[in-house]
Length: 73
Image (cartoon, rainbow, N blue to C red; front, side, top):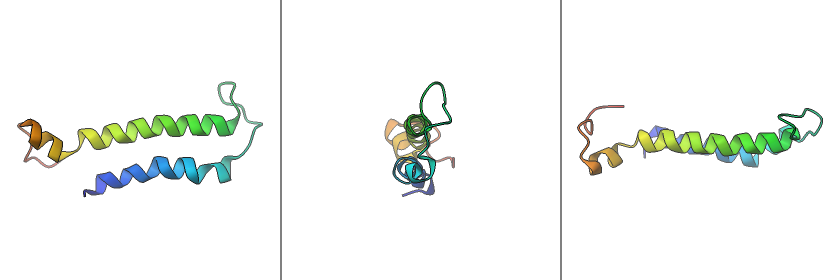
């Protein structure tokens, strides 16, 4: 397992530990209470992190026969 796979912990921490610190209503973000905006941001963060992991996965590149399979990313 590469070090980049440890990025998958960030969205989990944002969803599980974040609400203990950002449980507020008054600052509205795009018309949503702050906690709902936080969780929506965590959902977007999850998509971004999973895309980064997917595109940096060497095993996927090697299986597809990509010319950069031996190159370091």
